[in-house]
Length: 392
Ligand code: CMC
Image (cartoon, rainbow, N blue to C red):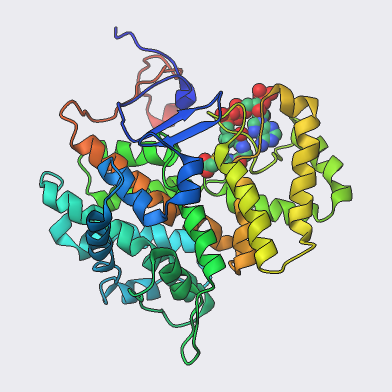
């Protein structure tokens, strides 16, 4: 029969060519189109990173202006989608709402679902980048029982998102530039990460020719799990549960105990075996943001730092090369901004959308692209004959 390689979890299988993101796990290096994440996080901004990921080069001033105009032109969602939101229970997790709403987008935007038309693919990409913040903010507002806030296109991308989340009618809401900068940085750090589980899901869904909205919804669904994007919510909840520095040794003991399903959330990575460069930037950012906001003595940050320190000295974590990942410190920043934990993963989804859609576009434009179709090692029954129910 056929010969194939057994590789559960795809730990050693390259499933595609890609020119978008490069990771060197041993060096702790992450490059978007060749540019180091540290430089982008310091000098660039999210929408510029979107342009870079989508088109391969940094934009000049004119290109940036044009791109910004194209994105802001699409920030509103179809008015009828408001009714769609209203079908969800108030207490729905915002990720559940997002999977549903994004999955239904092809029903609202028929003019950007033909994957064979490069222009429609382009419009779908812009729509996705423009509308995901609006959809995430609407999911949040709906969960609070507050009215939806329409996008305000005079604001930059992260400020507009914060505005849609935190503004309320009859009151002025001025976006704090510290929060906006911090949100922008979080978005840049999450924008792409080569063939992670959700991106692979987007590619697999897209390989069958499914429309881009359906593919991104599949990516959001995959991201939700606690081993992936759901780790940011799980991590902050874990840090809160640990509560004080005295409880850390017990958490470490449980994480090492193989009979206990408890893992240190925000720790470990399939590819990074030295450190996660995003976590480094995020840690500095957490310090900076709390400081600028005048939040001192944040107990959760104290627990996080001490947990990191103890784990990095522990034989188990050293031996298995387990380091804090991007999700370890992001929650502390998001909490300080005023977000509930249920919004952490939706914010990850908003940020990763550009990565997903860039990878999807790259795949569709590749003439060698085939449907993704893994094989298996069959371990079930050998052939046997059907028996009548009376004889079983
Ligand atoms: N706490 C305790 N032990 C761990 C942890 C952890 N967080 N992560 C891995 N291990 C152990 C694991 O039990 C295994 O031990 P053994 O070899 O004795 O069986 C060994 O380390 C290797 O782990 P693995 O699960 O085989 O590694 P993987 O590459 O399949 O999984 C991971 C990577 C990120 C899913 C995993 O480290 C994990 O579950 N971490 C916690 C969740 C998390 O923070 N996820 C976010 C990942 S980064 C951002 C993102 O993708 O969203």
